[in-house]
Image (cartoon, rainbow, N blue to C red; front, side):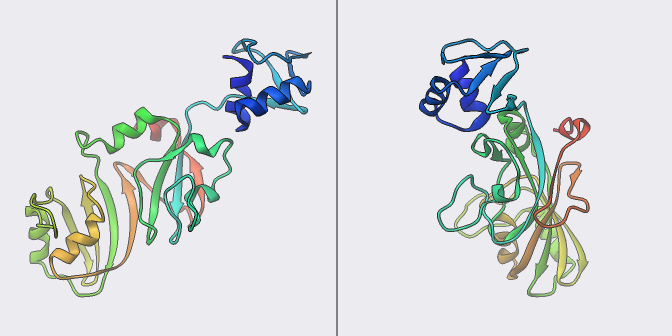
Length: 228
């Protein structure tokens, strides 16, 4: 990799800024000051910028407990984004694995591995996701069968795929989906004449949020990454 690109990848500076930094003599490679952006950086090289050793970030996988009132975006002019909760170099290199609405909390995955993301969100994979919903009106036992049969969402012709509805108590339920339409959980309850008061994602595939508090995050283990 070229040295100017290496600097841009590891510090977030632009290529022009990287060139100015090199010309200023602020970077050394294996103990020797390097000023040429075209210099090739071996994988084993030690690159130091202003006394700090720089390292390329490999594939990274993060679980965040997304709080309410933040959006799944790298940048937003009006709202706090989920990346404000993360301590990441070059956060612009990362993306969320799918999205949760601003008024939905819970398990959110963040990575810089596009292929891994595709394995989770691809419709062909049918990766199940579990949501806990608090509702305005009581649920009835026959609603379980309606979710299983598929529901007609407003403005759509095709029924939803079969979903699992587990009634915890009359106004709280777990919903397991294998697809991800726009505002799907809220629209499914609207289709049976109910309204979601709060929504929280607890699980993606076999991966559960666990005891992370709102705004807390951790890196996934190798075994957890391999679940997808």
